[in-house]
Image 1 (cartoon, rainbow, N blue to C red):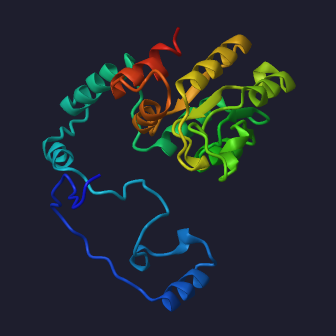
Image 2 (cartoon, helix red, strand yellow):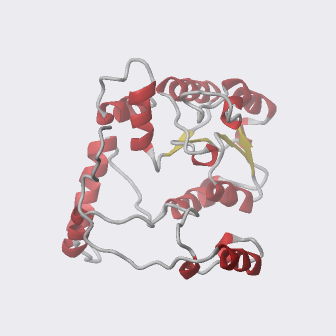
Length: 252
C-alpha cells in the first residue's frame, strides 16, 4: 500500500466517546469484579468486547432502513431478503432471526438433548453456552496448530479428522445430533477453514450418517482467506468460492 492512504468512504455521522485515565479504568474494572460485561458503555473508549452491532452502517444500509417495509405479512423487504438468500445459497427455505445466538437457541432447542455430544471446531461462546444449557457436551476437534501462536498455518480453523472420527467411534450415533463447523472459527482467533478440510469433514459426516451444520456468520471473510491462501482458488471470485465451498460441494 502506497502512502499517503485515505479510507475509500465518507463518514456521515459521528458519536462522542469519552477518554479516561489508567487509574479510572483500573477502578472501574475492579468495581465490575473484572467482568467486562458489568461495565457501562460510557466507561469504554475502544470496544473490543464484541463486533456485534458496533460498526458504522453504510449509506446504502441507512437507505434500506428508510424504505423498509414493516408490513405484518407479505412484506416486500422479506421478498428482497428471500431472493438474496436464494441467489447466494440456492436454498428455497430459510428461517430469519435477529441474531446468530437467537438462531442457535431455536435450532438447539429442537435438536440438542441432555447427554448429547456436539463436536466442532472451537465452538463460539454462545454456541457452547446454548449446548451446555441443555446438559449436552461440546467437543473441540480443532487442529493442534490452532492453539500454538508460534506456528504459522494458513487454516487454523480446520478440524482434525482423527479427533472427529474418534468422537464418532466413542459415542453412539444417536447421541451426536450434528457436527458444527464455524467459519471463520471465531473462538480460535477468527481463523479460516479450507475448502479441502470442509469437504473432508463433510465426507466423514456422511460416512457415519451424522448431519453437518455451518455457523456461517463470517462465510464471506472465510472465502477471502481461501482466495488468498488455498491453491487453486486465487483466480476465483468470492461468490464462486462460496458456492464451491459451502453449498454445492457439501450437497454432492
